[in-house]
Length: 171
Image (cartoon, rainbow, N blue to C red; front, side, top):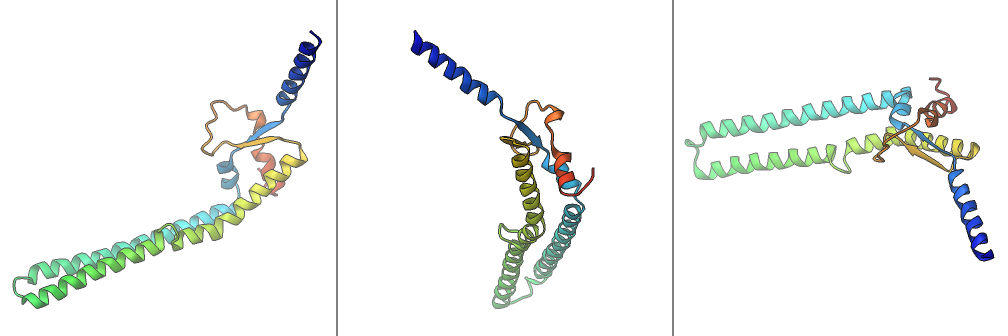
């Protein structure tokens, strides 16, 4: 009987500790949208992306013009010249695809630019959240805008504006 009581008391004590955890959440999208450097970096990346998309589109239009010109002349060209023109069109198309991949691919220039401009800001926010958690003794801080599904969130637990204040951005 005594063992059962000790086990029950120990279990209740552990459960009480687990319920006493301080939990909060942030909305990283909200935080980022209130940091002017991030907004500027996003605009710069978007402009660069649009510029490159237009450039790629123009290169494909050039290929289309080459192909249409070839279609109009192909009946007048000797077989040897047809093959040369076809190979030129195919080569040009491959070059454009490779160029497009170098800009927009997984390790392309756009990705590198995003890393260069945005990662440092994200790192600062992450460090601020970690510092805030340690200073205020939070065990868990969730990100509302991540893949985590929050079925309910009490706004009293949202520390996003506190993080912005800590970073020097008054909201």
